[in-house]
Length: 385
Image (cartoon, rainbow, N blue to C red; front, side, top):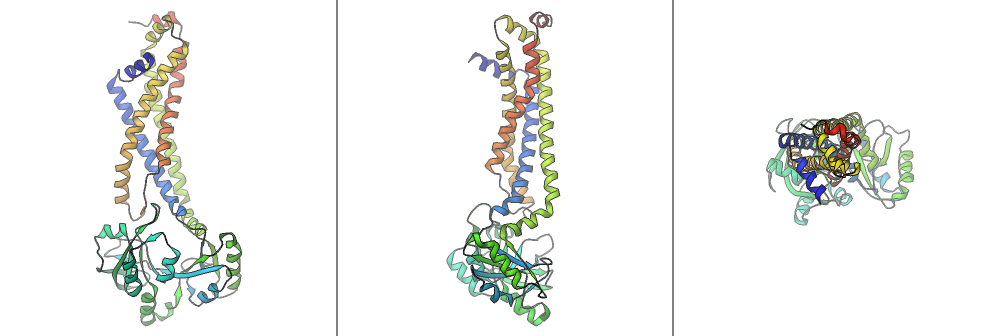
């Protein structure tokens, strides 16, 4: 108990120095937490994938279409439970700044394949009945202040012109890692318009989504589908939904590695800051530690004093950084919702922040503690005064 009181008293003896060190530690933990959240968010879409879904696309590239006629052939492959299809629409709302994911899909089968989209039943039926209707995520609706029944116009980029849609349904994610910023409408509306305006682009889809009965047979099903269309004008590449999503994520692999390096550089910097603070403190108190030795305190007790003081400072800084992380993450998400529709601070990130505080506290106190515990009493007493 006495040692604990001494630790607290020593930690706040130089209030300005302690305050600045805690602030520096807090800012470092905040920066580290945000960077780690960016990394976890980048990979969160993988967690939202299902082992029961496969994606079929053009073997050359996703930008090349597939004939709609492939639908019936895929549907009759053994092990295939359900097939849906769609196109990336690529429209913008009002101007290019208001960009979000928007797809034209076969609505009934698509919603059956994605039960993680929670939709009120009456809104779902309205959406399925209206070919000009669209389904939007809760966050997207809140962003633009849309209401059920509103007419929303998207400017086409891949498919030129102004496209009018009616908001018929709003979905929310069953879990936190579900993207709630998507805009989904009926593929038939797109296709019928293309038949009149651009017949060469009609009856083509960008991808097929397949629901399978047994995930263990995914490899056999993918091989069978790709073999079916081998040497055709539009060969296919079939892969699990997880592999499909990871293909997109890998495009930013270099960026993620840089963020990871920067996050660990922050740890090294804060370790240097705290170690410097404790080195200064130890030099100032060498005489005091010599007195403690004359009173019978062992080197273990002195080590506990120094290490305890360091841990108090680093844990205070970590708590400050963790408290600031949540409002900072909220602001980050609002500012960059187009790029990070899901941006949640994971419990693992908070645990990692606390572990870093412990590691930094112990590591920063090792050299000062060794120096203080090994000082000779006579040498230490000479420094008093």
